Image (cartoon, rainbow, N blue to C red):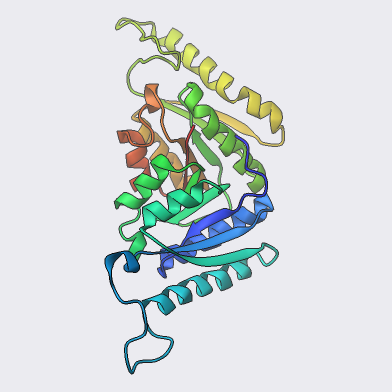
Length: 291
């Protein structure tokens, strides 16, 4: 996983408290990466034929356009409090939230969204915007959930496939930024491919299978462990529903990282049942990384 040099961290805001939580985390992420922060409000009303100007006889700073500009100004001020050395720009972009954020992701190092919102970001995370952006963005997406904490590990879901490599790399970078340990988790209920594509026989040696999974888990993180020797790594092989394992681990994590797609025990990320459940139920911020 390689962060795009000079690319901004982009955060979507809508005037909600969750949006400001996202701004604070986005500002810290930008400071870690030493890159600029871009604050964006998706302004859908012109597309719907709604007047955005002040009402006749009303205050000159009234109207939907001025309200959107105030949302952005408030977010810029909040970001400056958290990371005063980070260059910050704010803008109102005409368009639907999903379309705007997907376009922003083309040049972003990271897209940050709140777990729920108002207006253009209504329904986050339960609504369609976060699901669609997370599944289709060209950059990693960080969804701010739970109560962000400065302690605890970075937890990454590993399935042994090439598709989880990007998530592992992102997780190591985050752990290094945060001076945090990393926990690589593989949860499973039934024997699967162990990341190699071939199905295991219905009759299998449980001990041998466990050893194979341990080997796959260790090999999946070995290269990044060498690249980031300062990051303490723990391997967790857990027999249990992967979504439940990751959700429970999120209780003590400062960040959970999953791939946007996967296979095997964590197959189907992001749009499969595992990632969907973690997206809705995680107790910590969740990063979703596409291959």
